[in-house]
Image (cartoon, rainbow, N blue to C red; front, side, top):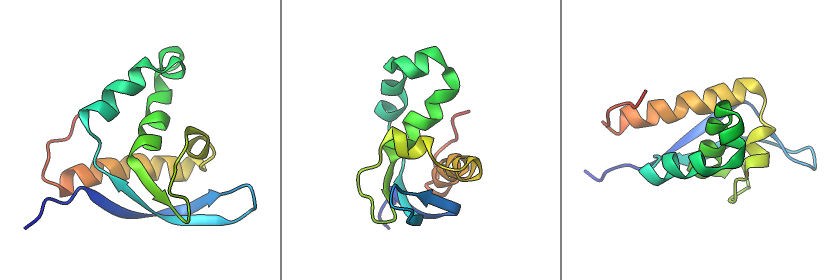
Length: 103
């Protein structure tokens, strides 16, 4: 059995792009140590620790609707319910992969 590192997800509300299109389906990969360390050097994270989840999600979400390049701006513009769902999805993906949760 192959080790699964990417997981599909569906946002409750969806990301609304600049053209008004709603994108609910996406794919995220498991976070690496680098994904968790590099955002700590970001000035936004250093100013506001709560921003860490935004930067981290922009690194691990690999697809959102038709979008293949996910930016911090896109994650910032998610509805709060979608942001909370995405955050919990990363935790569920870690459990499904059989890895210990880092809390």
